[in-house]
Length: 128
Image 1 (cartoon, rainbow, N blue to C red):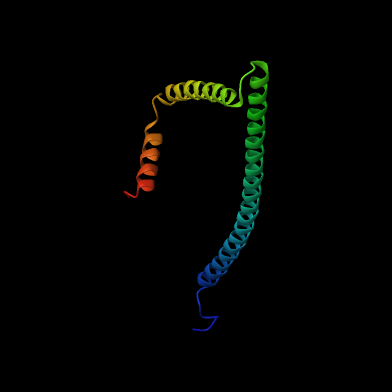
Image 2 (cartoon, rainbow, N blue to C red; image 1 turned 90 degrees about the vertical axis):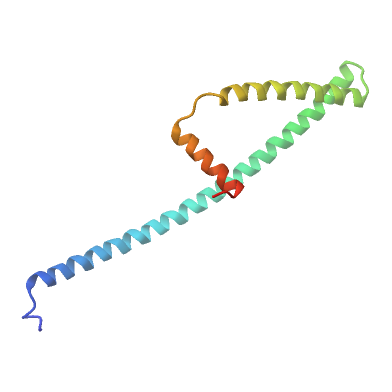
């Protein structure tokens, strides 16, 4: 069958199919570029979050050391007594925080949330 004998509809359909494939290829290329940008953004954001978290931890440790020294000087305690006083205060604060957190997390959950949590736990434990 020559081009002049082929029905006109098939030629138009082939052109539309070629155009759609071309548009899809362009869309896929754009999506891949977008994924690459997002990947770089997430990696750099995660890196800065890690730096910030490490700096925060170091600042907390420096604050704890300063607090121990202040407790030691103010109350005329030995270093071990000051450390025990700070550890006791930290335990009380941790207990209060855990108690409040437990009460907040006790609230009712949506069925989708419970399902997602149970799936995650099963996957972590290797039961799926």
